[in-house]
Length: 506
Image (tube, rainbow, N blue to C red; front, side, top):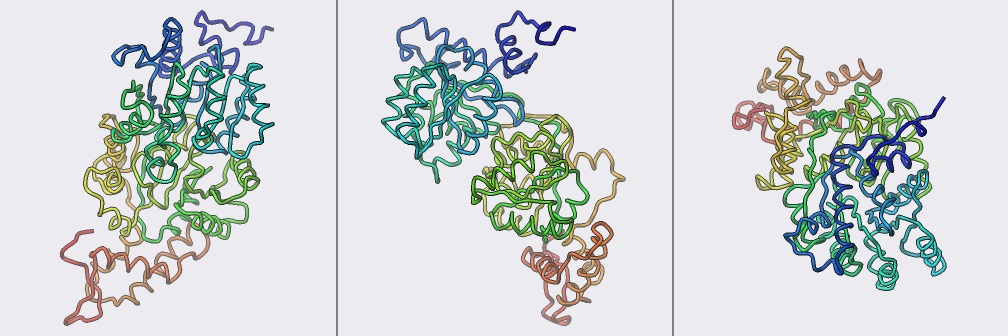
């Protein structure tokens, strides 16, 4: 019996190359377009003496200087790996994280691509060995922005006649370059020094503001943008309102599908959340991941989660970029991402196998106050609008990326409109508000905290089999209700008793 490799043939050279080297018979239309742009721009450049003679209005100039927006999981790696096999010289791929470079090198070498890594701290002998491998035919050079600040390395790379530079996670130029990774601001200089025929910047999410900044840093403002639809229809967006976020996360860890990622915001919170989960559901249920771990610890945790069918990973955004676990069913945020772009990027870790995945944001009254300081229309304010909109959550995110219109394939608000008879669960503070509204001036703070303690433990005990609420949790719920102005203490006839505010509705 003939194998697939013996019977499959395509008249298209690119598709045939994809099959022979990666076992892929079909390229998505956007992949095909990006690869074609790279190859066409390179072929055009070969016919002229100097790429600088191309004019900015020339179509091949545009195709040779492109920013590609592909949603997470769309297969952007293939867009620079395929050209690397076809071009008659090496490609330089710039990654933001050392761990991501190592992971990508492993994946490339499992296939048909040979690669080398340049990073800080390498000896002269290691560098010379890399140059030897490139001259012997290694197609991919992996580096981060910092190592490319070395003039000596740049001069050596210039001699290698690099044909294509690809910048992965290019939104980092804007997000990090102006804050704590200044080397990103120098990538334009790196590009000018190496002067390759083709440069492609890849990102999964970018608002018009970020897109403009990336174009300025990399291409002096002149770039051809290739944008696929930003909407991942298999990601369904939900918001859960809670003041005691860890308790809500425990509840969702029991009721939602796994494997699950819980983005926690800080290193301490990842460790704390993982500990709570292991106490509640048994040791080995969860692990934590953040930038403070040793490489060995990171590798062990990544391997554990990659192989797990029901594990929970509590992580900071350090785990976000480049992760290729395809079967994540739920992405939970107990701390909101700083911008809509970051949220879409992190939520996109789910459902990379094409199956339905939930992205759930836990939003508190404290979050609402903290995000209220951002002006309407700003990138930061988009997260509050996403959490508090009464319309479609998906459309809020798409609007933040430039206004793409889409029919919602799934969010809690649109789902509720389709099924108006569905039951809505009260949040922890919603329950407290409801009790106080029915019994105005009846409860003191201590009394409502005690009532909440009993009621919420009863609810959670039915799902989790144990009491997880503490008095400190209910104190936090009432504090946030008071800080938000939804409830207040009576200072007159019912002094010391709580009542709902007439100024703010729930």
